[in-house]
Length: 170
Image (cartoon, rainbow, N blue to C red; front, side, top):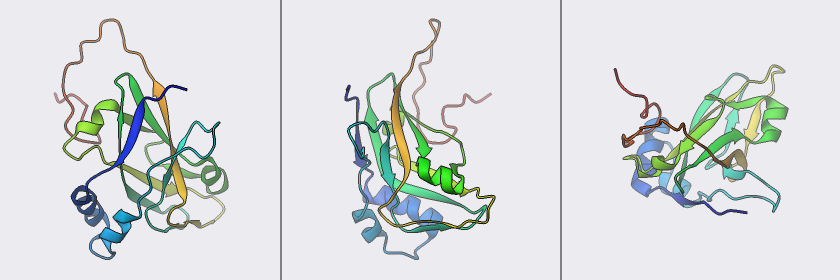
């Protein structure tokens, strides 16, 4: 098995800023930050590295939430981390990532936002089920994939940001 990446926590200042942008000052942000667990595989045969909920998450049908994970990942160039909901949550509640598959590029680690991985999830239950994810429980999984580029690729720009930051401006 090839080892191509390493997970880290973002700085407390980065986490606090992103957390308060979403939730305001209603929680002890330092305690949430200290409780963050780095993603890990559950078994030798697991492809996915589980991301853990930093706090309890409760979503009624059709409700969404953006979750600052407090995690960043450094990986070799030529690899990408793809993120998906944990399969059990998708199967039981139709929980999904709002962008369907999260794509974390290798250069995202060096962005001004420290490469802070965030996830927006929705309970898309058609049966009226409420999903409850206890703090410290896996809610998303990341899988490293190698990728190729075209023979005539000339990309030379440098990333500086998150969502949509690699889209060329007209």
